[in-house]
Length: 136
Image 1 (cartoon, one colour):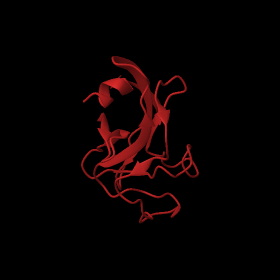
Image 2 (tube, helix red, strand yellow):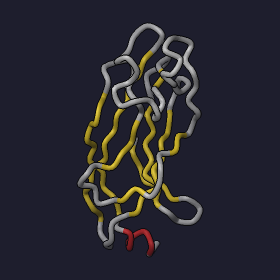
Image 3 (tube, one colour):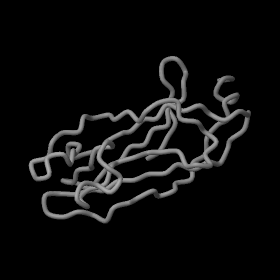
Image 4 (cartoon, helix red, strand yellow):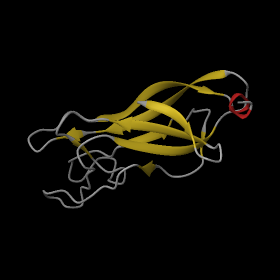
């Protein structure tokens, strides 16, 4: 699920909650794009090159990644269950709804199997212009 939140100061936060199947885990946002030795893929929520939003900071994770129970130990994983990533953003100017896009990457694995990775998938989103939010 991808949605827009606001922090207590009213700043826009682009959020994405990744919910793997029962018993599956996701990999840390901080592992390399191609995983380690071909294993795993990072969990990422990013703006596309043509996005009308501007990132104002780094990706923030809702849960801390940890060392796995398997090798390589550097292949950090999130505990099984949902993970929310949040990206502070500046909304584009305007008083209308705007069609935009974000890019997601993730890979879900259990102790027995991995699902195919999703890499750089473009997801359409509809966002409010900055003036719409300011007037609320």
